[in-house]
Length: 191
Ligand SMILES: Nc1ncnc2c1ncn2[C@@H]1O[C@H](COP(=O)(O)OP(=O)(O)OP(=O)(O)O)[C@@H](O)[C@H]1O
Ligand SMILES: [Mg+2]
Image 1 (cartoon, protein in one colour):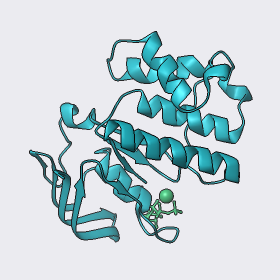
Image 2 (cartoon, rainbow, N blue to C red; image 1 turned 180 degrees about the vertical axis):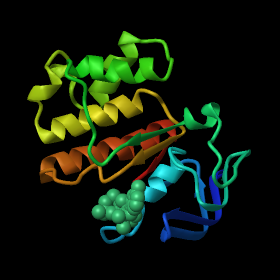
Image 3 (cartoon, rainbow, N blue to C red; image 1 turned 180 degrees about the horizontal axis):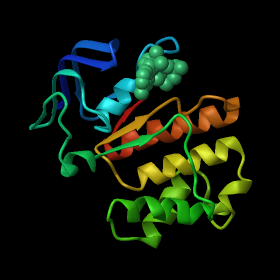
Image 4 (cartoon, rainbow, N blue to C red; image 1 turned 60 degrees about the vertical axis):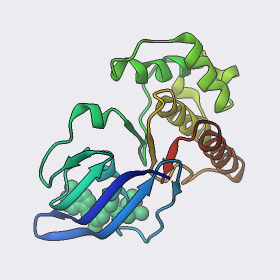
């Protein structure tokens, strides 16, 4: 497997507090990597670094051939290849399908009705395409957030506790969706 991310001696500090310290981490294409650790361990912080939302304080990161130095913003071409579903996803006060289409617009991608509908089918929400996002259950809302990320066909899909606070049925559904996506498209999924 080819290496997608390389991290060496990466730390993240907020003020004088070091909240993350990674000696060496390689993440390969097609790999599913799960981060496990207690609250405050730095899991979400690592995802913000992998998503290039925040730069590392020290150390060097590579995303394939691109080197991102500490304190530097990653180039937009790199940032666009990675998508995150955040711990508390916020949906727009619109229909389910327009939430998914919005993901495409935001990234400057052409809106594709077919792609939106295929993605909604992949997360089991075809029947709710026209429903208002406000009226969804927690599990349905989380699947909309997942569809909004999947529709972008990222090289790395970063998921921050995508099954937290969900019932066992929705936890199972989301795990199946991610496993299937990884199998079929050889995409990379992390949480
Ligand atoms: N912007 C910030 N400024 C200061 N401290 C921060 C900031 N963001 C995160 N932290 C601190 O960094 C530490 C790691 O936070 P992080 O959110 O990465 O933990 P986590 O492993 O995701 O926890 P949880 O399981 O509760 O989501 C925490 O102690 C947190 O308070
Ligand atoms: Mg967290």
